[in-house]
Image 1 (cartoon, rainbow, N blue to C red):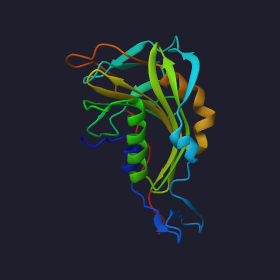
Image 2: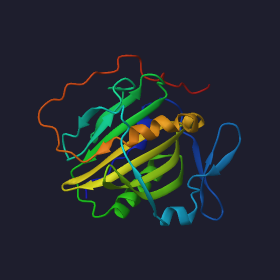
Image 3: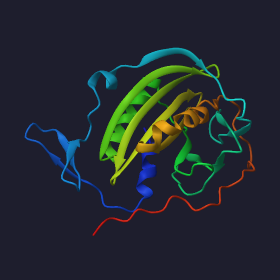
Image 4: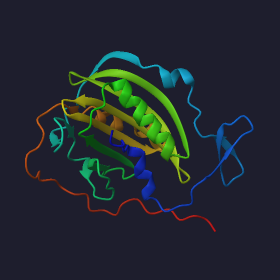
Length: 235
């Protein structure tokens, strides 16, 4: 199966020194930070990693989310509030179709990712996302994992923290299987700012829909303000 590329790769665009990893006498991997502290590289509770709960609450798109961005690969798309969420070309990966930035708060972001690969089940997709994130992040912690119904669509919801090259981001993601692959929609922010922006990040996620894929070129407005500044390592 083609290697699944997930959204934690976005962190690799920042030019900073990677943290040092080490292994304890018990064989557990830890991350050593510049300030002398450390933590386990993967400290998610085993029950959270293994269990997917079901949230019976229906989730629906916000009334202000009126502009539809369609995937070019799969039958999926996202409705966004065009006054808030703008397309940015600051990030590029082979599976990333759209990267969004909140024009009112440029430290919050969104991503629509798709691939034409056979995954099998949402549980399989969860496992692939976690494995790939753990392999590419210095630190990973899964906080929530549940099935939801979003605009009538059964999706997998994940919420997790990932640290790569010294930066803590908190992510939440919807993912669902299509007839020829999968689609995931992610909203995220710096971990310290996540809770205060969660309401808007939720509204962005709840714009995910199953719809006919785009044909031809879609006209979009690209966010032209500078992307987040590159962070330099301390000498």
